[in-house]
Length: 93
Image (tube, rainbow, N blue to C red; front, top):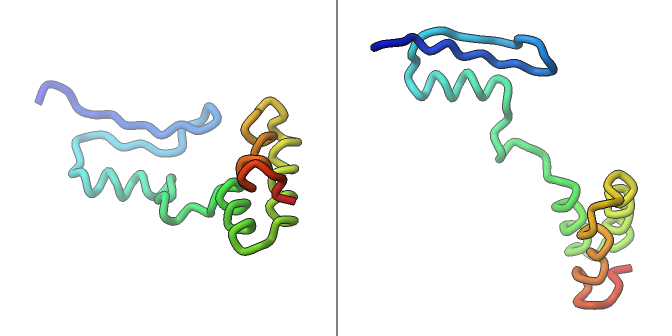
């Protein structure tokens, strides 16, 4: 081996954790999992929550979620046309 790995995890400009030396893949994944949740453990995104609400007949809930998203991301065009797309061309609420 010509060099020794020096792995550092930095967040907001500060060192969170680090390790030196080669580790088996399993150990690297375990190290990473301490800081990054598995996608299957992550909560549903707001878009997924809105789609779930709509699929269960809660159009008002879906509307509230998308209105929040539009307020946070007014430049995100897809959030503004979502009501038309989700209702097959008509309004979802």
